[in-house]
Amino acid sequence: MRSRLAVVLVCVAVLTLGACAPGGGSDNVAPRTLDEVLASLQGLPFREFLDASYKEMLLRNPENVTSLGLSAAFGMRNDKLTDVSPEFILENYALHHGILDLLHTYDRAAQSEVDRLSYDIYGWYLDDWIRGEPYAFHDYPISGLGLMGWSTDASLVALFTDDHPLVTKENLDDYVTRLSLVNGKMIELVEALKYREERGIFPARFTVDMATSRIRQYLGASQSGPVPEAKVRVEGTIIWTSFRDRLAAMQGLSDKERNDAYAAVREGVQKSFIPGYVALLKHLEGIRSKAPEVGGATTLPDGEAYYAFKLRDQTTLDRSAEETREIGLVEVSRIQAEMREKYAALGLAPDQPMLDLRRAANADQPTCDLSSSEGQQAYLAENERVLALANAAIATVCSLTPKYPLEVRAAPPGSGSCYFAPGAIDGSRPGVYYVNMDGGVTDLTSVPVVAYHEGVPGHYFQMTIAAGLDLPLFRRCEAPQAFLEGWALYSEGLAVEMGLYGTALQDLARLDLELQRACRVVMDTGIHSLGWSAAEAAAYYETERGAPAGSQFWSMARYVGFPAQGLSYMIGMLEFVALREKVEAGLGDRFSLIEFHDLVIGNGAMPFPVLERLVDEYIARKLAG
Image (cartoon, rainbow, N blue to C red):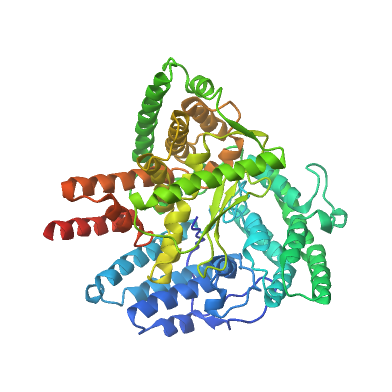
């Protein structure tokens, strides 16, 4: 998920720019004034300008540079943390303004076809970021979701447990340095939260509850009662248990180096991680009584305008909340009708409530018990099996090939979902499909559709292809939410054409998840435009999708905390379907499914208005040829 933090622009000439870490860190990039940065970008050849200016933005997020695997390419160490202060956010927006102004100094018409496309995409991203300035602090950096990129506390944990490389002695030294900076970052984060709260920006109360529960897990603390810093044991923290296993896997260390590392990390956990996360926990528990029950854009200052911005930001389309909601209602009805036909084919009375139909159809479905290690291994093996089927069939729909492999691993406890974590651009870390192992007995019929969404032909396939393209760096890294999730949802249906669903129940599981995404469109617009409470949204979802009552608590934190993100899936999928239909209608017998897919994902992700122009040009070339 691309994030943006905006604020009213102030005098920018005195701002200093650099990848400075909260609390210190080595001076890998000397701070420069904004004027100096922008001056260094002036007059560059167009492609050099694209990469150089995008690099300047990336350097301001050293954690992301590590996650992308670009540290070596940038000549950086992995020893800094990303600033989260309001002042730093001001600088980010000032830099985006300056880069957009420089972009406009280039003659678009004089560029090659490829570079004109880059010009349009880059301009859209920069303009979109700047449009968010009036809503600078409407985001709240702590959410109920414990996934990388969704909440600052969770992202920092993922950095240490997954993304920070631990291969060389230098990696190890950087890890220790970074760990020592955690307390400083948490102090800065708490101040940034207070800055928002003073402006009326609070998370929903149940979001606070989910976040504090997760942080207690990180600390190895109980789920109730005070958490005194002195009572938290290093050995119970998520950082220590992860580091212990990762250090054991490192090669080439002497006994002394290994023992020194244990001692240094123990000290870092004790003196930096524990006090920092305890302070964050205390702050969140302290604001709980002030947090609204409902949450959502309607509770925020200028909430209507903010939601309109988020709709465009997340979908790349200029549609009102009312128009978007109507699309959701239509899609819910369409998918329900298709599902009822399939339930009828199974011998069920199709006019029953959706929940009754789901339970009846799935009464005898195959399951797997995740409470045992044997069950978990079998579940991982089933996910690997269905992905192998997709890999064997992918050439029938696309000629492109990812350069980096995909691994299937168990998701960390408490993640609550399956998800894809992109690999490093330099190939040093593979893409990983994390399979949720929480819970006891789970069904196997939904394994294919989720694996195809997250793996092949979904996220892993599209994102890894993009990362390996010979294009400007920003086109290999940046992606609108609706493009990413729209392609992944489109991929679930594409798997039907690839012959990947082996049973009627597996295909019904696919439709069930498609219905979930359609319901999200209605829920999202309900919460953020009509003022629905989380309970009202959950009730709609449970009725229309057919989910058990009370099962949507976890999901509500996502829909309430991230306006328009949940609806980006369905809106994006419909755009891919519409573009495909446009090409099919325009080319008739000359239509090639492989060429279409090569076109729409073989140029990197982009806003849909730009992608539509690319498609129109493709149709014109084919007809002219």
